[in-house]
Length: 169
Image (cartoon, rainbow, N blue to C red; front, side):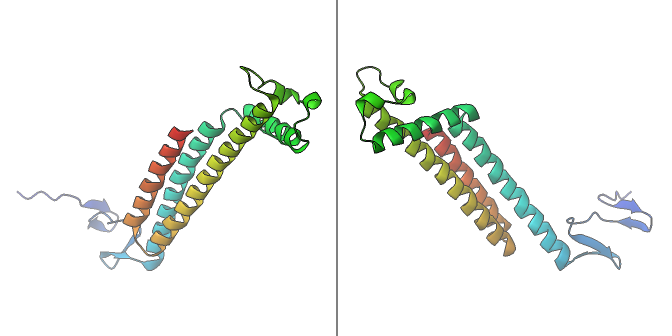
């Protein structure tokens, strides 16, 4: 007795399963259409790009933390910059700067540290944005050439870089 595997019953008889969703049943065989193949590549590119976006969004939340705290830090940086621009006047130390005047730190040192932290934070966010956009461009370029393996490798590479950026923060 022979066992027939991987055949499916359809209204017009038995046929093997489609090799991919880009194939259509035509004249008794599965045929890959260029239009369907291109659409499948486009969908896969978008799926890979969404993976990158999700990882970048998660890293951004790790870097920025609570949105209200991020606003608080932004306000402190603006006040520290204004204080610096005025020449660090001892009688006009902003509250956000004076809160950092601890453990022998001067108002000037506090303002400079606030500005250094703000610059580091901004640099990390910009680096994350650059990584995300560059990876998505690579993914789309590779998929447009039908090189899904290179697109997947680009995703793996950027995910590793994003993980490293999160660990540094």
